[in-house]
Length: 179
Image 1 (cartoon, one colour):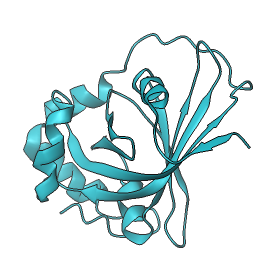
Image 2: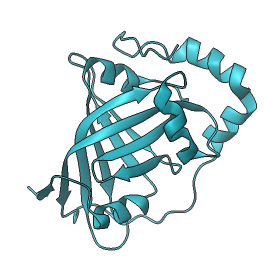
Image 3: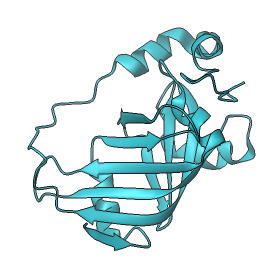
């Protein structure tokens, strides 16, 4: 069952900031559930009840489509070294595009990450900490640079062209409102 909290504590925040990977899960009202790993220093704790993460341009855009249908989101962090812990953040999220007013508020938090597609703002409703004793140890080697290199090579126009072709519609045919 784990322990449940109404907000992110300083201990939780430190744990989150030390993770190299996290997992995001969303689902539309009807259709496929999406579960994706994320990394690259793309998540920030804004305060005890808000996190933001920068979504980089990639092969799909399920999270954006799902949140327009159903704003529920779960983020999960696992300790792969040190003391075992699984930390889940449950809440409701919204999509922020480059054309939205809050984009300028949050984008400075992610300087240096090319390929920005959306920022997701999640309001935390519950934090759950569980043992994590079944999670194996893994050693972190380094971040991959293929995604950021790919985005830099494409440039703004190339990224927009890619997003038009590959990021407008979800697997279930839902709009992402990227344009």
